Length: 124
Image 1 (cartoon, rainbow, N blue to C red):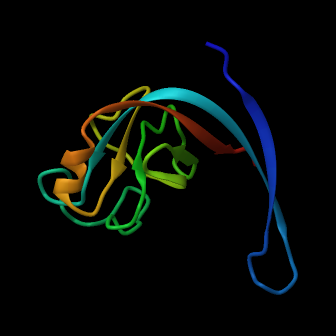
Image 2 (spheres, one colour; image 1 turned 90 degrees about the vertical axis):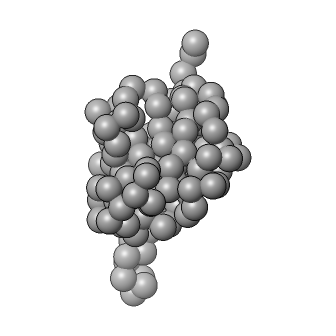
């Protein structure tokens, strides 16, 4: 399978005072197994906090950080675009990601899917 890799540059104002910092991101499309979880005690340790310290009740995705670095962004069909890779999980290995929903029922309804996702990795 051929992989498309390209680079995009974003200019981001961090202080709203006319300054910018250039960030470079590379993108790749790959097929991943996509499962789902929620912040409940059945799916996680139940503390409501992700591996990066974010609120687990917000949109996000758990990844194998040896494959997709934390802080990367993902475009996931049927879920969202520019989703932050902000969590990890013991069962999340290789080309498997776990998307986060607010409720257990939403996670169960997702099931297991194989999807072509776009992964954005920060280059600098």
